[in-house]
Length: 313
Image (tube, rainbow, N blue to C red; front, side, top):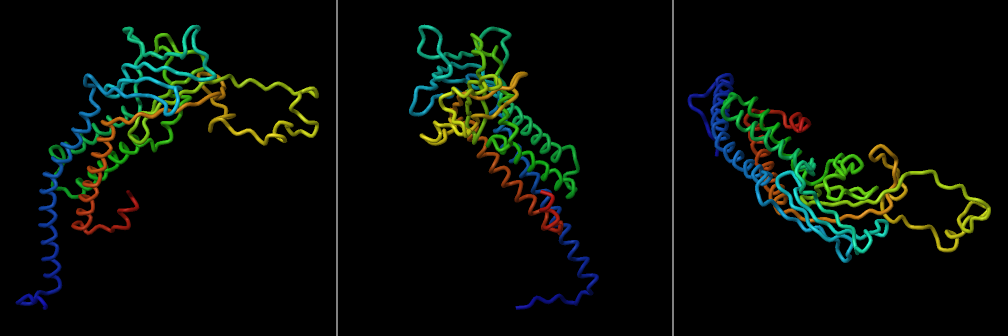
């Protein structure tokens, strides 16, 4: 079945009518987006509330699986770890005399430094910026300017995506433990010498890395009397038992930690799922999906080139 316009319209008039219809559709879409922005604002506020410094916070268990290497807990309030008590058993970390393990306790002395989780601080800032973008799009800027709203939505999507990536631990800079180890004075008593206590967020979980370190001093020069060296340059031990396996993935690597070069003797990883962070990731995923739909709708009505737009995302 065909649809005919009577009286027939000239091509110029038909083009004008198409442009008028698109303009009305775009205006309707921009008005409807204001209601959607209110829903986005509510979702972002829920994420912000989950990172707010509210008592009593979240107490997370930190215990190694199938071993007694690590047993303890930490308490997170907002972006800070405010309390913690962890018992550690490592071959390279002898416990104090009369004790079965080394106890790492967060100090409650007034003025003691806080352990701030930089990743969560970054996520909170991105969520705050996202709320500002929504507010500007609603009240301050020109809410009926399609180009303005389209730019705001793209910026909002970038912020949401970055916040989600940080919570998943997808940004490599967060793993620089040699720069982000906890201050010794956070603990009472302070950490033993050459011990790195590093907390980070990976897949919405709190992950503790404990490392015992040693200075990177030049190795001794072997002599002809060294029993495990052959004159051909091969280790006799390796020839008999095969090459030694690395005890962990950082064995033999050199790091610049607190002003000196060190190597990692032992490395231990313990993970604890954080329910609040899991909820935030789920909410950010849903919000990002909604913003993507709004951007796509504007593309269609504004008759943008999809190829060019996608290359900018």
